[in-house]
Length: 422
Ligand SMILES: [Zn+2]
Image (cartoon, rainbow, N blue to C red):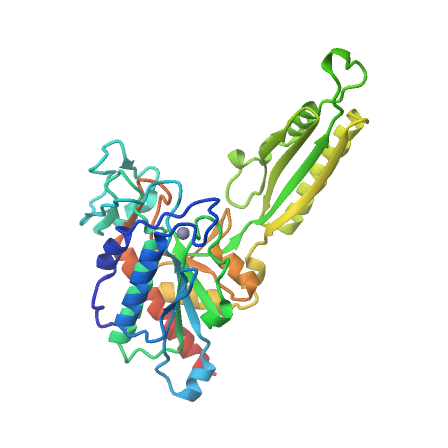
């Protein structure tokens, strides 16, 4: 289907949004974690209103919500689920997002891309083979001295452009569309104050994924194992047969962790065991270990393995104490998303309609959509087009952003068509 163009293109919007510094910060005692994120939130609020989203609001936490009202009859609107589209305003604390100068490499003709502000920053085809698919497209990068912020300002630009186009194309029949922009995703707090009820969508999609065609709905199951190891402290000069050193006990535990189950030795669907915090002295040591697996059975196996290690070390040091506990962080969102097969089916159809091939990819980490799905709003993640996130060589093709806009419009349409068919 041919659509009337937006008032402002996805690229123009994107260039404006990336120039607003919205870097979030770990361990902040305020929400959002940085005040500067609110500048973009306010900008989006004003722009939504100017586009015609009459009920657009921003709450005290910075969440911007709004509705593109259904253009169906009242009776039809009741039969079509309200669909939400969500993106996050903040950028990663890992790389500076201040003074971003977007550079458009027009009509890309293959080969590596050297960034003009720092010639040591090179996007290599070898590392990013998707580049080969984007010959003839326009690639946006930073100048090499900052990140770009395609994660997730590409998603924001795409959603805003889709809103613009929904108003420009009244013939495109759609139900209620909900828009949500959130702060602090990069520091794992993006859904902390997300009011699902107020948002008002029946289902949602985040536009926060990578390359063209990607649909993400699988995350790890994430647990942390916490070993509390207690030795016996005695003056080392008089310690014979009395002292038990907790540091040595912990080293025995670490020694026993399987080498082939580390983040540095696993990929794709494999889980891992990753010791990441060690804290204490010879009398008492805390050891924290990440357990990650796409299957709960894999988590259970890893727990059994750690329990066996604990028993062995306890036997070696009968006078020391070993305690092992677990904390659950999140579960694979697949378990929730599969409750509503239409979510993925329609996303695949929408991606095909813009001429791309849908591809299921795994998230070897968490995502806001996973938390939302467990809170009651099923939210898979769709491609926003960018790659090399959280780095100075981050890049996104303009035409892929435009295809993502098309995916949003098609999703609005497909949910309508299919829901009214019955
Ligand atoms: Zn993101």
